[in-house]
Image 1 (cartoon, rainbow, N blue to C red):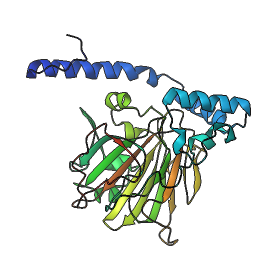
Image 2 (image 1 turned 30 degrees about the horizontal axis):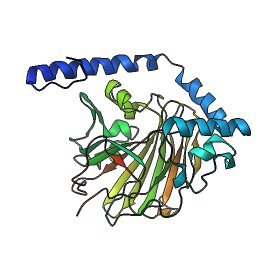
Image 3 (image 1 turned 60 degrees about the vertical axis):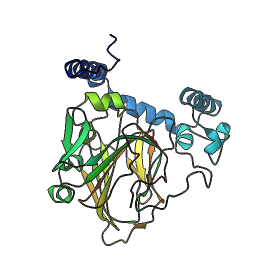
Image 4 (image 1 turned 135 degrees about the vertical axis):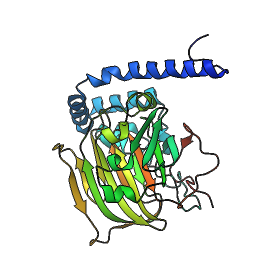
Length: 301
């Protein structure tokens, strides 16, 4: 029996899962030794560079390689983008992502990595892997405690996806925290193979107050993610000083509406959201790996 064929008996299934887990760990082992910071800096420079025809060739290769649907873009002509970053953070045509009539809408195009209830303060990453709310938000005990027994959703953005991030509901910005960290890939294999992945990688924690109470959007960096940006601050990283940085907004009345853009990845990654206890119910058709489009319903009545 090939290892990819999931067996049906309990003992065989346990052996299959153990073998699959070991293979995932072996698959991500090279990432521990790669010069991830140097690769990310190099990718950022290339993505920002205005290289004329070479930029267009790079974009055209990327479109073919990942099956990007340029018909959805406000500017479908790949030759019109001055640099790769402009293409990667391209705007969509108006009307391509209608907003669902729901309390919460999906903030990104991507796929569901994991979602569900937070077990005490523990967030499920993959089979055999959990991490704490406190570690995800950069060690802030008081912030993390607001989400004990709450809910989380982890959404993965693949290279082909639209990479702007939108608000899942109306929100008033309270604080933003940059947390330095590793730059592992965040693809599904790495999520299964690297313990505490989303609390280890570099990330930007955005804290809001909304109609359902406090909520957090965490933008998680990854290998070759050149930078992350928000609409109220601009580019957050680089620089990468190696220390936690914090910005407070309680007195500035920064309000964003449901569906409004709040940030973007310059090369893609993952968003993790936290919501308080008794605040939401996820749609009944949500399952791990399900594709999502920005604006889809993320909650049900």
